[in-house]
Length: 83
Image: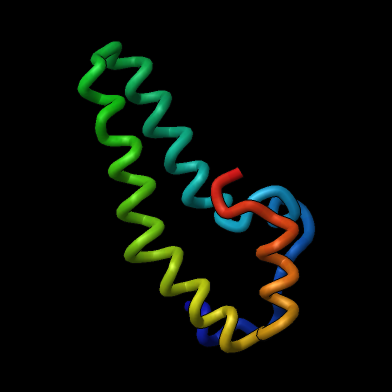
């Protein structure tokens, strides 16, 4: 829960992507689409990204920005959301 965060982690994997767990989910879904070898499976990947961005990531970032202010703004300028 972002509202209970006591520090902003910007090192390790978080130095490359702001959302490693969600990126991992996207990689797994991509692997599943490859295994299925169906063009229709690839249709759901952009929907996954759009849904997560709108309903999970943006609200999380709003809370983190309120909690960490300029530190979080600097982090978002250096590290991409979906790297």
